[in-house]
Length: 417
Image (cartoon, rainbow, N blue to C red; front, side, top):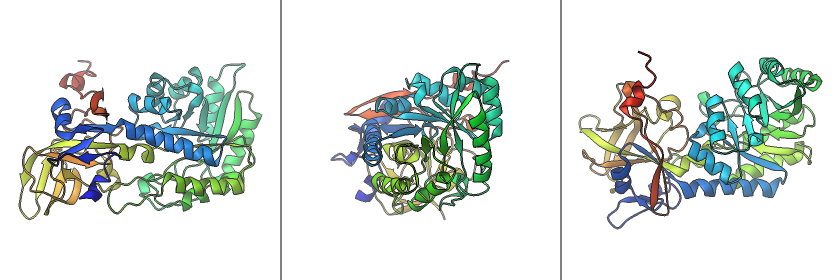
């Protein structure tokens, strides 16, 4: 099952006894030290991916910036890695601003998103000197003008709907006509004119984003011309959305191929002196992590159910987006028994992998699910009194928790009586 190993973080391997090893750490040792479920991140893989994005973009468009889309994995430690590797941070809410600042980012390198930014969020952005606020609507402009102190200005981008429909799940589609994000070009043009007349806002450029988990370079390239038609600006933020490889059937473009298409369109349509920003998220972190579970129950019948000690409390991607994952017993890759891996939550939709072949699974086995670095931590929840799981960084044979497992007391901490 060498193909399955390729879904785990780069550098993963198996010891002589078959046990999975990631970041130089054995899966059984990680389970013993940190318990299960646990989200294991190969820190070297995270850093290598950040460096790849920086180098590939700079080689094609020197005046450029890579900002990590924090919503994909907004753990402070992950954001800190990105900052240390020279990336800025894209934030989509007050909490992501807080963790970004704790991670040590220069506020000038933060890009602040959101289709419904409230007064508190706008005030945080202004107070901390956030570099770019992406204006999604006229109400954003109203709030910014009411908040920015006299004598100061706030740099903004205007989010534009390019009218591009990518081939991805409807829940992560954002560039089509009818999207809740941004403005159609004619409406964007009117708002740009208003901002250009403002004494408190400085119009820096435009932003576009077509969706997430996109496995074709075409929509990225197609999104450039609609924003270019709005005029010449100093900054063009061309978003993110490159897909990740979750299963054998997924064949995402390389970073190089993605940027060849995107920057090829930029050379055709955008002024050569402009700054280009990209916002990779899922493709930056998905492959750098896996989740380690313990098998709790095996129920054989018309369907063989292998139930683990986690589920939709730590991975909502399946229930929300029908995302396909793969899995293996940590020390016995492959196998011929067709099973459905389910979680422990009281919900029939709590399925992690529907139909996967395992090697004679039994109670107590460790089960490893690769490619869980994107959107699993950020959407973790307390359904059924679930305690959110730890995040562990592994590298060079050592491991450390960067987010601890929740305690029972944590579940009571917000009670007021």
